[in-house]
Length: 242
Image (cartoon, rainbow, N blue to C red; front, top):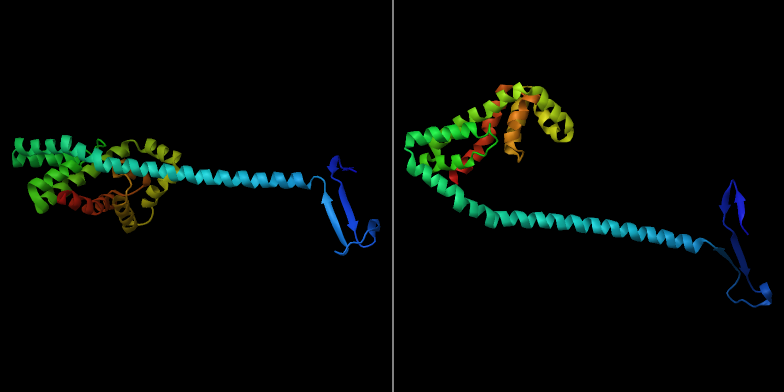
């Protein structure tokens, strides 16, 4: 029998009792009560199906994630093993050798200074120029040449970024999570800003983009310049050694 309460169906609960004298039989197992819901089996099946489907969805999510990271790792390994050496052998090294053979030492120093100073402003990498400086001038003069040019290279985007301050601030507002670490560099006193800029330079964050975004984070020019130069020292020595 089915009962209706507040326009909702209440399933019938059938109770069966069996014992020694029930139905005239002799039951040696003793008295017990058997509770059975007619819809219980269907509900248990639906619940099992839900957990089964949920478990498989989680499993396939982790499988897809593992395959994605595996593909990215294989792609990076292929670039390091084949694409990178190919570009070095066919493009970069011939250009570097041409520069060292064609230009005299003073002219080459001027070209290297200009490239290290201007390439970051044009969003171009300056590592090949640092390599040539290390090959030509060694650690001492090469380091002084690169660090002086780098001071100009990080100052020009800072000054250019001040001309487009409102546009850069609008871009940072569109990506608040990504800009949080940049905004943190503009907080605190002079030493805090210097330390934050140094850590950003050492970190894998694209320093070319930070050159333009720094002015929008209220970082003063003094700690920005000094922190940038200190943070670039490891990269410069690695480039010269390479």
